[in-house]
Length: 233
Image 1 (cartoon, rainbow, N blue to C red):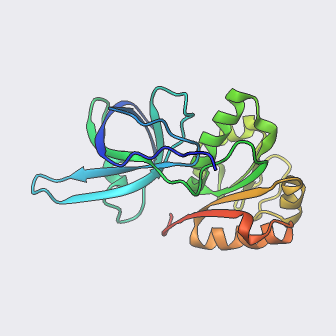
Image 2 (image 1 turned 135 degrees about the vertical axis):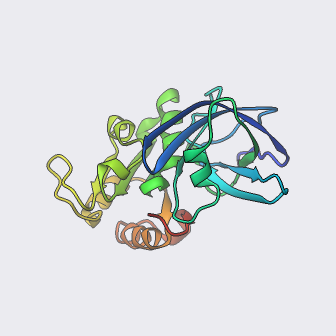
């Protein structure tokens, strides 16, 4: 098995670029001190510290290509969240944050394995890192991506996903000639042909749904790697 680097110590990330593409998303690009190179599919932990030393921390998938000099995350603002509203409303270029990463070995894409990725909403973020890596290294035929969201506005990186050739499945509005609906089993079967592994990232309900349609497409459970997160707007 290929060795996967993991950052075990806290370090400092300085915000070099920040963009708020919607009222619910913020993209932050950090310059990370003593950076450990990451693999597509890994994540970072961001820790906030209050004046009374109260801390809150959350994990966010990395969107950047490993060759990118900055580490990029895309954060969705969660209702009653502690970290995501601060990042969306308060963070500015030049701010310093406590970071730890990259973290995760299980969800890393081994680029020699033809794979299919299915992401729901902000669950597409780790697949953006995989896409960017695949395009830079010329192995994009080995990686197929399906991205689902309620609307186009609520799908991070939608333009980049379309440019890559990902299937975009919107559930509450038509998308080109595709009628609004959840992912059709036939759509998955076509893209899963020849895939040896599947990656799924999204809410608990979405992950369960994606697992069922991957099974129908012939991808066995032991070849499906999952990351799921809590309630999502």
